[in-house]
View 1 (cartoon, one colour):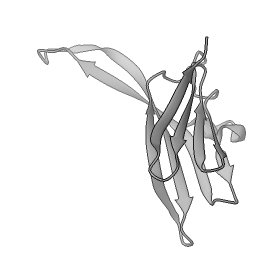
View 2 (tube, helix red, strand yellow; view 1 turned 60 degrees about the vertical axis):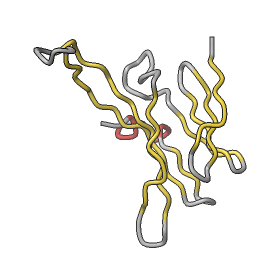
View 3 (tube, one colour; view 1 turned 30 degrees about the vertical axis):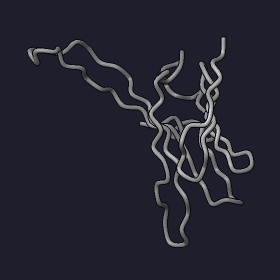
View 4 (cartoon, helix red, strand yellow; view 1 turned 180 degrees about the vertical axis):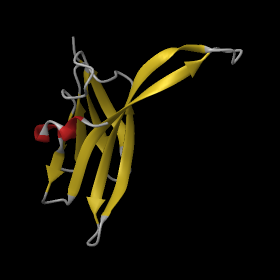
Amino acid sequence: MTPVATDHKAAFVDVESGLVGFATLRWQNSLTPSGSGYLGSVLAVTYHVFAWNGSGLQECAAIPLADGAGPQQDGSAIRGMRIGADFYLVTHAAVAAYDMTDYAPLATVRLA
């Protein structure tokens, strides 16, 4: 599931660099340590970045977001953007910078 299905502004599109990005959400069940049952479900959020290679899209990064989908629980508040050679992810709880060469984290600023 992705918020882009109902909100086109949730998609990151950079025509100049040939990049597209969006968040995906899925429910993930957690097993008890003994494996006897479920502790519960958590909403796992991953931000995907794809690059156009001339004939199709190739995934460049899949960045898991530890802060989840945000208060709305639909991922609609997650945004990606490029400034120069860095990629930024903005959520309800933080702004994180990544090096676009390998999408390694550069810095994170927590929001109050």
